[in-house]
Length: 278
Image (cartoon, rainbow, N blue to C red):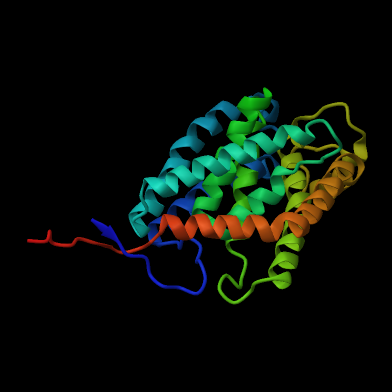
């Protein structure tokens, strides 16, 4: 069996097929519902009784992640090399996370997730982000009710990087600034979305920043913005700054290495069979 890679000027990210899009849409819909349902719940819905529902979300998330991988393989025809690359990048991301643990939002893994999502594409990027966060939680002892929400949020960060424009036309400084800018925005949004996971269940907060079950959505969103500004912005901004600096400083080398590995793995290359010589 001989693998004949196509001659391409640039390495394309792993494309999305119909099954991949359907799987990503399903897991994202589950994630949006898990994060946002308290905002739409009635005042007598017994919100506090659902504060420990995270294990059920985790149980639902794992088969959905597997569905994304299977759908991508079915659409594109990837082999074990793609899965191996996914595992290596997830391990690298998990190893980077403890470097900034406990230090005002400094998380160097974000820049690697953004660059990897850019190269691998939205489907495998989503799985990479979720698996990396799961592995890092096991490595750092950060397993808790927040973990499935972190997996979803990081998956969205990587998926967004894979959806950025200019995969074939944009290179050099332009691409680096695009990824750095996206990384900064995604770093802040990650912290904001993660705040939404725990904020409705927190008690003892000041009236101006606390969640009020059954109140109009606009009023609760206003309190949520005030809560984010008062609590997490000091972590989100350093995370954004570190992501920008690492993307600009290490981005060229990391992107080159990722694209070289993808090219050598010959993702999406046609497989041909040659008859044995007489």
